[in-house]
Length: 86
Image (tube, rainbow, N blue to C red):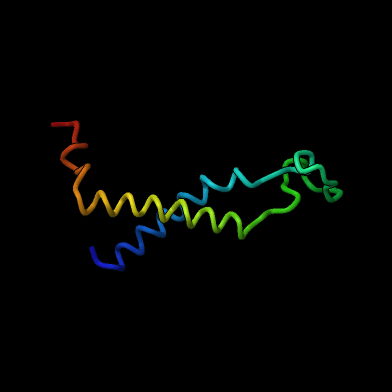
């Protein structure tokens, strides 16, 4: 696999993992025990830890990409195994 393809696949994993990681760090004002800004929605997070989300997203996506590369090299699951139509 060319490195450009690997990088593109890693970015796809990164953005997929971003949507998995986002809900774990969002805390509303009631959950955090802090007063929210007047006029702010009740469901809006008080403080959003962007660097923590980016770090966890990078870690999870790198682990998933490593599993993908290991499968690509070793051929554990192939396209023929997933062809249920034949």
